[in-house]
Image (cartoon, rainbow, N blue to C red; front, side):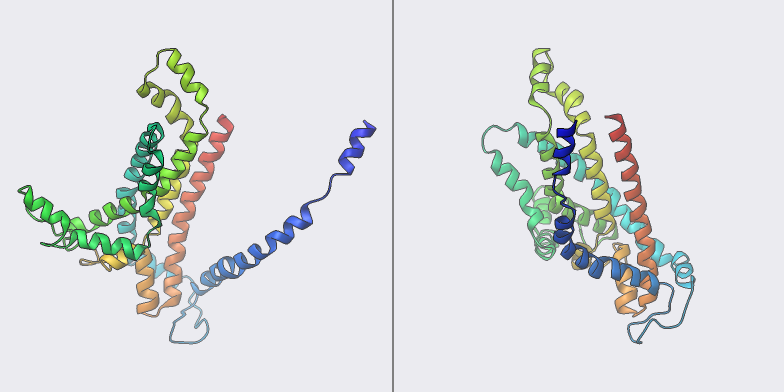
Length: 300
């Protein structure tokens, strides 16, 4: 007992060195994340404008009331939710399917991993230029392929019924690699012994996927779904570059609405209120993920 107590007393305290190494990150985090977030929240209660100095006149909750009563705000929020509905299921299912296929390939596995992940490292402007060329009426690869097969042309980015679907296809192609890598990491954590034992018992590949792979990837799937929903709710780049919110505002996202009222109409206070409301939606999604994660940890 005496010897054990002596060993415990001699253990070094790493708290101070750890705090020293964390200090630069904490300072930058407070300066560039926490600080601006608090200032934005304060701004949302004032009639702040980019053409006037200071916070401006106190507005109370009027900015929030105006945003909640604005049809443009709700329309932009619905476009964001519709984009999330269009992109999240394929980005989760396709990433899982491609990860399973890539994991079972014996030769050239590195090529498939690189091929699926490579689009994710491209800048948004490059992705937008590639797909704007593909969607170009008459000259684009997609329309030329359709006319060759005997179908009529589709105005991918100019038709309100197709514009959001076209942006969703672009986003799925662009960001699939991130979820693909997460699923590959999850597959590496599954013990090979389980597959060998199930094969001895006569289980086929499909039964192994249903009974072993999918249940053991449940935590990874939860993480992928929540990260994908949050990423889709924050969509801006590809929409702004490819359609600028058109045609007829049919693809204007919530973030572009905040950008328009903040940097085009110079109403920074109102834009801060609208962005705070969007933040509440994203925070609710994050809270749901935390609850689901805790339940899964308790079940393990």
